[in-house]
Image (cartoon, rainbow, N blue to C red; front, side, top):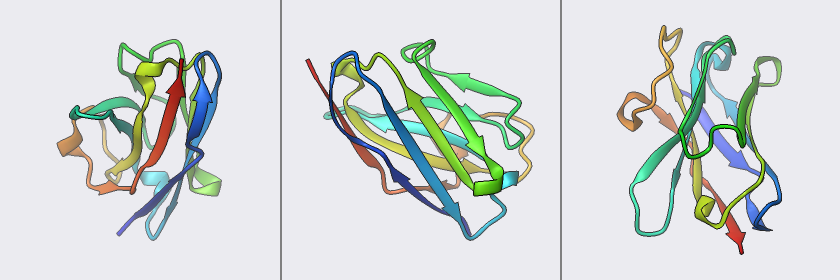
Length: 126
């Protein structure tokens, strides 16, 4: 059983940056693909980014490509989502999720992730 806790959200102005963290416990974090999703007000939860268990492969939603970077530190059992040039449309609750262990793919579908954090609010003002 993997427990995930997100942190780092907040209220920021457009054009600035935030770094979200996802602390994992209770499982072999190094063996799990880690994904980030978000749910904006009134919308479905959507895929943002994901990184393979070994950190070699990453995937991004088109809307964040070039602005967001997903990373992980297996030694610290922590994942990160660096968000640059934030836009008001990035406002959402951000969730980290884990899939695995030892998955051969980097999934983008919500249904493919087994463990979820509670989410952290990111609000970008214009």
